[in-house]
Amino acid sequence: MGNTARVAGIIPARWGSTRFPGKPLHLLAGKPLLQHVFEAAGKCETLSHLIIATDDERIQQAAEDFGATVAMTSPDHSTGTDRIAEAAASLPGLTHVINLQGDEPLLDPLLVDNLARTLLETPDLPMITAANPITDEAQVDDPNIVKVVLDCDGEALYFSRSPIPYRRTRPDGLEIYRHMGLYGYRCDFLDQFVSWPPSMLEQAEGLEQLRALENGIRIRVVITPHEAIGLDTPEQVAQIESLLLNQS
Image (tube, rainbow, N blue to C red; front, side, top):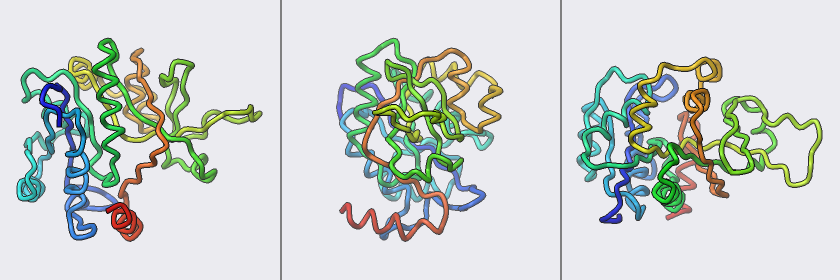
């Protein structure tokens, strides 16, 4: 990891999950899910700090056992963004934060570095995320797959669980993009973001990033061919284990 960068990678992790309690420590190919994410993030060149933020002592102990630095945070946070904001506040001199999803063991370090470098090279950019083209038509109508539409400068116009854009016609070159749950923030903006109450569209769609758009904030979207697959349910374990073994 770069010694001069001022970007922290923070992985929020919690024990409670309606569909998959204890998910961060579930073993995949012999290692906890969280360890796979941590080791992938450790290959990034732009991160001056790499931290796991949690409120659970079981996660803290396991993470420290595999060599991670852990920030213990409040149990009262309603979102991972609130948790990373608290962890980031403990790191003096930090300028930017990358929110790394703790349930995506196939994290692409090159994509993380791309987001971090774009933030560093664009000082007035408050927020950045990533998306990939949808190739499976079934995902377009799947409300669990978040879609994003972009303007001509590659910035987000809207995120939705609905199929967007609605294709009344199909002009050549029109892509449908799946939003990936990977975010980067300028630290001063992150502090501002978590101070705002949940917005109307955010609550309607269940998408926290809409809070930024509703408050007039630019979100740059980096397009990547990489399709990160997160572990959401126990039924996905065999598929992700197979992908991890093929990757190694």
